[in-house]
Amino acid sequence: MTTHVIVGSGLAGAKAAQTLREEGFDGELVLIGAERERPYERPPLSKDYLQGKSEREKIFVHPPGWYGKHDVDLRLGVSATRLALDEHVVELSDGTRQPYDKLLLATGATPRRLPGPGLTLRSVEDSETLRDGLARGGRVVIVGGGWIGLEVAAAARLAGCEVTVVEPEPLPLARVLGAEVGAVFAALHREQGVVLRLGVGVASVSDHGVRLASGETVEADLVVVGIGAAPNVELARTAGLEVACGIVCDASLRTSHPDVYAAGDVAEPYHPLYGRRLRVEHWANALNGVPAAARAMLGREVVYDRLPYFFTDQYTLGMEFTGDTTGYDEVVFEGSVPEREFVVRWSRDGRMVAGMNVNIWDGVEELQNRIRADLSRS
Image (tube, rainbow, N blue to C red; front, side, top):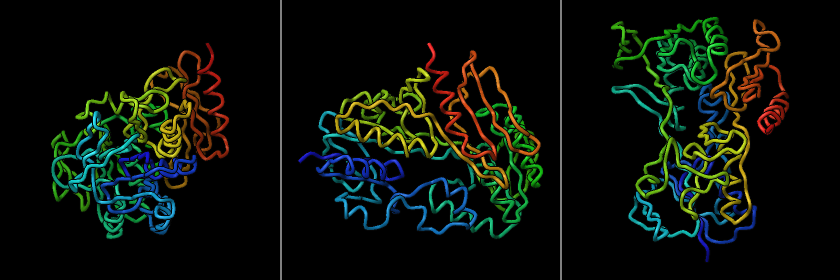
């Protein structure tokens, strides 16, 4: 019997198992995950679930009985420790050796930390611990002004906490969206009472707060560290797979070994529209990329060229972003920035490469169509 193995039991792993069964794979299917919870989605952990607006059961990808019903051997609380490519075997932390015919690596990413105490946000347990901490009120310092940091800041303010965000860049989100849009989010959070300490790094974290690189101490009852995440590439690298920023893949999400694929946060596939490799950590990448990888595992001709997509909700601002801003040389706003109802278009060499709609809904498809048309021009 043919055996397909998926390493990583997050959204990517669960959707891969689902797609393989829906596409007719009737062999042995093994889904391996280091966490003890069955697969769940991560966006609610910094949004509705963190704010107590959604029930726990709603975060899970499938109901408890789905895996048994679809003959998926779900192994939780066990991690892959070694990948033997020549033998087509994955060695596991419980001492077992799992053979495979095709393998999908969906090992995700691990939050970067700072020395000393400080909460990070990746797992459902992290979200629950943080929610309990916010419920106690007090002073919260968030290290990092990226998406996680700003979403946690919004949740903390809604919980009544005093919030300070420390970010080494001149503006939040500047490395991702540029200064023009970063200024919009800075103004949004300041209006809600968040103190932004910008252009300064953190030297250390203690039980009483953070010490800035300037020597100043910002006192806190709770410190949250949101400085990005590192893809879990160790298994792939030690096995001899090609690794750059993530696990290098072609446009079908096949790695440098023909029987091994990668998807989700850990994958760095070639994107045919942008003409280079892209590693994307957003939810939609796991949701949409994994079905492509699963079909490729079944021998189908697959080219994954979906545009990156991300959404956020902070206070009264809702936003959808699509594309990739790397190397943009022009940014154009359409609509009312003061009223926070507008569209942003990023371009490079006269071609639109990314777009964002703020509090204007049903516009992301139009943005994606324009980006595709521009990037396809010879």
